[in-house]
Length: 359
Image (tube, rainbow, N blue to C red; front, side):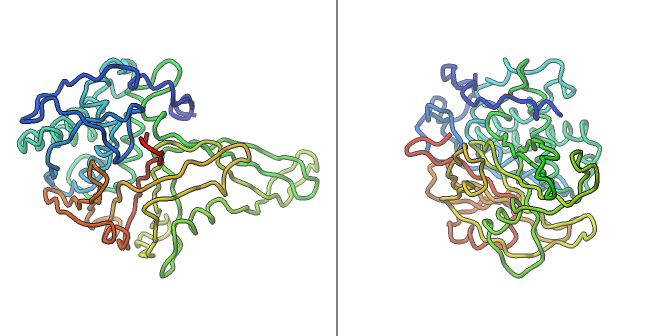
């Protein structure tokens, strides 16, 4: 079990939400601009820093996989504000293997994006590239890498940099979910095993086909399976059924559409349709757990084979009304219809819907 797997499940413990708002970043024209924001993952108070005009990110040589993940994480308002306000500094875990270097590099890049100063943005992208390369050999050099792999590593490193004595961090409080997996012998009815599967990214296999829906993938993922397991009651190998159900969902739900398999490096170009809002996983939860309802705020797209290709991302703007396409340095306005028509989505970012303020 990693520290993230042992993290506390109590979102209300989020210390970053208990501090007074402090504007610590100097930025042109909007030095003290703070407003109510209804576009994505939030402080419980609903107060979020106003963001200047959106900035693209330079491609340093096949670094589009970094750029799209940075843009999506920047649009998790609670994480962005936590970094920009320097609230993360008091939470740095000095015994982390990363020594706080990853969260510091992410925070500096977020501040540069917040200010919109092009040279500063480029410098901080280079810094982040250096830091992730120092902690993951696969990210050194200029080879194309998988954005999902980077996202998983970044979230793990950020958690390690910020985890407290109770095993909790902003990452675990915002992104951690749990599945219970129960295996039962069909011959005698005895429970053979029970396990808890912790996730920060819900990874759903995409089968080769022309088209399917996100709900289809979720339904398949949580479908009862037949497995052969040793039963201690029967003292023999028996056919068992395995059920998987949700016991915890996070305020920010990240879904990975796994279009590759270890046996086949070709991308599965199945068009996966996904909802803009109203996403619920209630049909797959434990009887005593109620699923939040989610709405979309970012999508990572990939075109090409696993070893090359190009990444772009759609992100909803701060006011939640319009969308933008981020393609390295190029940022352009788009609309929800275009986002939902994207046939090569790879990672979906959803935030819990509330009547007023979204967390």
